[in-house]
Image (cartoon, rainbow, N blue to C red; front, side, top):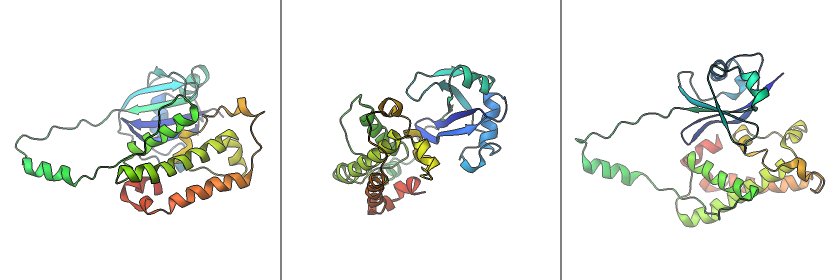
Length: 242
């Protein structure tokens, strides 16, 4: 059965990370989207999107890092996956926010803004290295989902520890093909799937070390320490714990 790797986003917010879905028969890109969000296809995903969301544009590509091509809502999905690529990104229109009425109490606005606690993110040097790019993408991912740490000091200690541990775990699994590991009952949470297929594991298969369950367990233990930390219990990380 044909398949496609689907992502749904709204502005900077990812509503459904990269996830492979079956294509049971030929249909338009729009019809596929409607069936997906209405749980007629892959109902186990429980995508938090309603069918009333308007699609701004659809982008297709051969790989995550490849340049994308826009397609019409009415194009046939199977035909496109064969000719253009299996990576399909549905970009939804962002909500139009109305301006604050001039008559609103200025003091109330100041108090409202003061109550909003500023969150900080760990900082890393920018680089074209794939692994370092993954690390920075994880920082952006936390920011886009409303996560962060209460001070820059915590961000550069607790935050860096978490990002580095998560990067190393994803990279190790990806180097040995996460799909093959899933066949061995190593199941990866859907929320992390968009960060895989970046290591170009095929090109490294002759030089990389053999898969070691003990080494994978060390990565998991490192992440487990982060998962039980007090900062992970904060409300701004509810989306990650869930």
